[in-house]
Amino acid sequence: MNDDTRRPAPPGPDDDEARIRAAMRGRAFLKIVLVTIVFSQVLSTLFGAAAQALDPDVSAMPSLVFSCVTCALVSFWLQADARNAWRHAREHGHIRKGAQGPLPGIEIARECPRRWLVVLHAELNPGLKA
Image 1 (cartoon, one colour):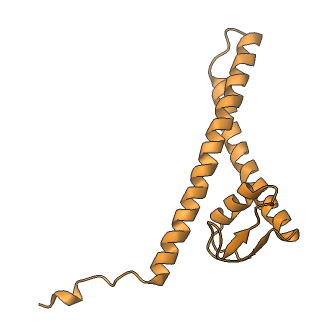
Image 2 (cartoon, helix red, strand yellow; image 1 turned 60 degrees about the horizontal axis):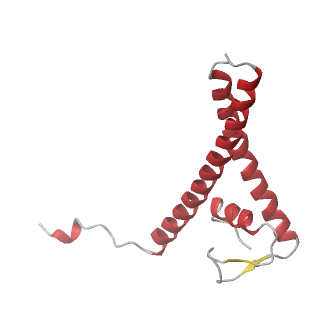
Image 3 (cartoon, helix red, strand yellow; image 1 turned 180 degrees about the horizontal axis):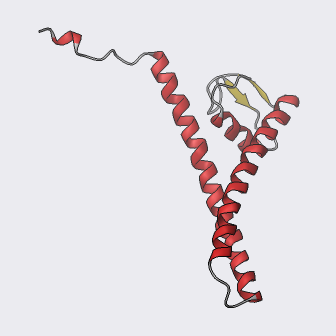
């Protein structure tokens, strides 16, 4: 038998682009998870302290529910804020086509007021065009 028929095809430009898009989306989700965890921990700690001050015998269930709801709300808020920052940046000319910067095909001006949110939105949606 010929071994050449068993070898997979070498990765092409489409495979590289798919890998880059997956990496961008993964990096964006990691940022969302980290910000969500930090905010949730801070707010849950404050909520737990307030609940203990009001009722020292309060169970852990209200804090657990508050923490889960906070995670969901912070995650949705962050994604919505990133989408709004993208829209605002496009309307005000902070986004243009270019090879400079961390995103392929998109250049975000340094003076963009919410640049990190614009980058987050672009990473979540790697198919966006300037």
